[in-house]
Each structure stands twice: as C-alpha cells, then as structure tokens.
Length: 112
Image (tube, rainbow, N blue to C red; front, side, top):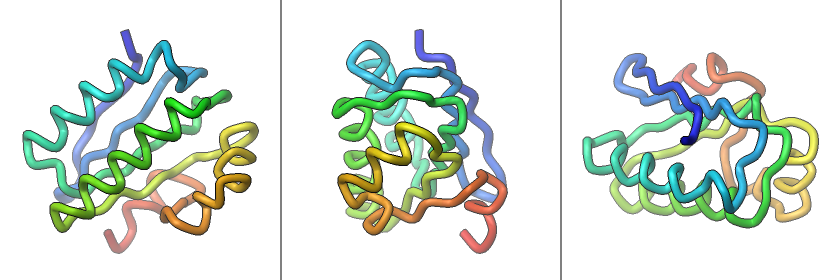
C-alpha cells in the first residue's frame, strides 16, 4: 500500500507521498492514485515528496506522466520537497529545468 496523504487547498490537490522509496514496488499504486486524481478532475496538483529518499526510473516516469497528462488537460503539476538522491536524479535528467520544482508544498501552492 502506497502511504500518502491527499488534501485540497484552494482547488489544488496536494499529494504527499509518505514513502521512502518511489520505485517499481510503489509506482503501480501511485499510478492508480494518479488515474483517480485525473478522473475526479484534479487538474492542479502539487506532488510533495519530501519523505522520498530513493527514486528509480519508475518513480520518475509516474511524475512525468502526471505532468504530461495534466498539461494536455489544461492543468499543471508542481513538485515539492525534492532532496538527496531524487534531487540528483532530477538534475541528471534535467527534470529540474522541465518541471516546476519548489522547496516546500506551501511555496508550490503560492500563485498556483
């Protein structure tokens, strides 16, 4: 079971991943959660991942997929709390240049 918390603030869904690993084991549940968000109209999403210590290609793929799907629907995703190994992976893949990344969820919510 993917540990997470969903909240909504001013029409923006905040998805807080509460797992240390966002990888092939947790991504199938994350993918289902993303599908449910899109179906219920969650067009603006903050993907908060300060608890995530390790991310693999599956984890990166779910974030990129969410970004592309929401953009196609006229929405947006912002990523918050990226640090350590995930931050290094984002930089290596240049996702830090393609995705809006913020230090905290509160900062990501500002002006969304």
